[in-house]
Amino acid sequence: MESAVGTVVRGLRTPIFVEGDSLVDLIPPIVMEFYQKEKVEPRDRDVLGITESVVARAQGNYASLNDIAEDIRRLFPEEGIGVLFPILSRNRFSSILRAVARANQHVYLQLSYPADEVGNHLVSEDQLDEAGVNPWTDVLTEDQFRDHFGVCRHTFSHVDYIQYYRDLVETEGAACTIIFSNRPETILEYTQNVLYSNVHARKRTKRLLENAKAKKVIGLEDLMTTPSDEHGYNPEYGLMGSNLSSDEELKLFPRDSQELVEALQKKLKELTGKTIEVMVYGDGAFKDPLGEIWELADPVVSPGYTSGLEGGPHEVKLKYLADNTFSHLKGEELKEALSQMIRDKEKGGSDEGMSLGTTPRRYTDLLGSLCDLTSGSGDKGTPLVYIQGYFGSYAD
Image (cartoon, rainbow, N blue to C red; front, side, top):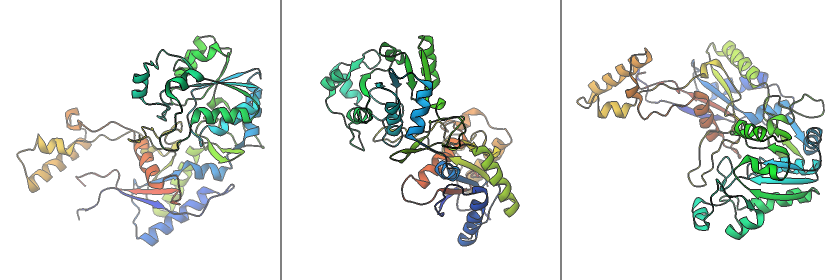
C-alpha cells in the first residue's frame, strides 16, 4: 500500500538522567515503551537522536571554574593573557571568562565586530556605514567604540556584552582591557600570551598567531583535556561546546559518543531485529533570520553517529523535473515518470542537472538540526528524538 506520510519526527519524553546512569541500559526500554504506547513499528534506517547534554550528564562531565583556572595557570604566565574572539554568550562563555580572570591578573579581551563568530551582533552593518568604520582595517579601543556606537545591547537578551564582560573580569579581581579588531594579530600589541576562543575558524586564527611569532598560543580545545578523578574532561574538544551548569560549574561536551551510539545500535538490533541509526546531537546548524545568529556554537553538530549516517543526500528536484523534463505529463503518468527517475537515480542513472536546487549537506548536520529544533533547549523534556521515513522518497 502506498504511504500517505513521508518523514515523521517524534520527541520522546524521558526521566531526568543523572550522573552514573548507563544510557545503554536505560534508553532501549524507553524506545521499546514508545513503540508499544504509540503503536509504532520499527524499521531499518529509523534514526534515534540523543541530545549531547544527556550524554554529558550521565558521564558526570563537569568542571568547576577553579578547575579551569588551575589549568589556565598551568599553561599561561600570570602577567597578562589575551582572550581572542569569544562568543557573546552568558551560557557559552561567561563562566570561561571568569575562570580566565581568576587565573590571571590582566585580561586583554579582543572582540570581533560587528558580530561574533556565530552572529551575535554588537552593532549592525548599517551602523558601521553611518560611522564610517571599516571592520576589516579599523582597530577600536573601548572608548572609541562607545563614541561611535554608544551602548549596544543584544537583539534578544538586551545585554550590553561589553560592560557585562568587563564586569565579569573585574569582579574576579583582574584588570580588563577591551579592544575591537578582526585581525588576530592585533592582540599581540597588548600581550604575547593568547587564548583564542573562536570555534569554527580556530585553525586559521592559530596559524596567523603562530606566523606572527606569538609567545604562547592556546585554544579552548587545549583546556580540560586530561583525565582526572577531580573533574570532567574532553580529550578532543576541551572546553569547546561547554555551557553553563551552575554559578561555579560548566558542563563539558560529551566524550566517547561513538562508543555509545554503536553500543545502542547493537542493543536495539537485538531487541527489534532492525538496524536503527543512532546519533548524539548538539546545536543544529541553522541561522535565525531575525537575530542573524547562526545556532552552531558547538564544535560539531554530531560528535558520534553510526555508519549509516555517513555522507549526504543525492536527490533529484521534483518540481524542476515536473516543470521541465516532464512538463507534458499529468496525473498518474507524471507520478510514474518521477518515480522511475528516482529509481534510476538510486542506481546511479541521473545527471547533476536533475539535482539543481538541492543544497548539498551531510546527513548528520541535517538530522542533528532536525533533532535540535524538535527537542529545543527549554522545558519540552524530550532529549530523545525518533525519526522515521527520512531516507524514503516519492518513489516508495
